[in-house]
Amino acid sequence: MNSRSYILRFLFFVAVQVLILNQIELGFGIQLMIYPLFLFLLPIEIKVVPLMFIAFFMGIIIDSFSNTYGLHASASVTFVFARNILLEIIQRKEKLDSLKEINVHNMGFVWQIKTFGLLLFVHYFWFFFFEMFKLNELFYVLQKTILSTAVSFIIGGLFQHLFIRPSNKSR
Image 1 (spheres, rainbow, N blue to C red):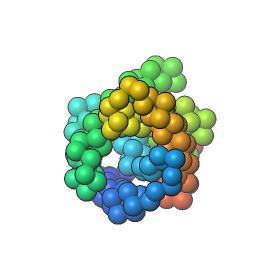
Image 2: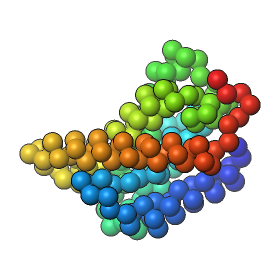
Image 3: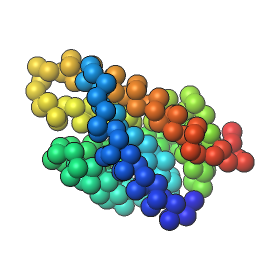
């Protein structure tokens, strides 16, 4: 994928998040966030510092439209930092090809659950914990985190199946 495609994808994810998903309320504290999928789908070979700048920029744009005062930016930076650590651990075990795009078609559904699901959980926990910022609300934070992670994971999987074509090098 070329840089123009990533810029268009960036704009698409920000627009969907700000214009559609921020307006939907499902109840039980569930908040839909699709933009972490953009950060997850970025190439493996991008170093952590530029990745953190991309995540911060994306998060601060979403924050400016959501009145969340840096919550999306900090959660996004945490997401890509955890992504970098997780992919380094996985790369040592599985020898990931740095040219391969990370998506459900190339990596498989189980791999997607283990990686994107875990990273999405970290993202949501960070977001909700700092939104509440009360230890006595920890169970409510966990409830919101688990429910939002599950729903957003399903939406992310549907998005990948609908909009991302499988490559010829699928596992």
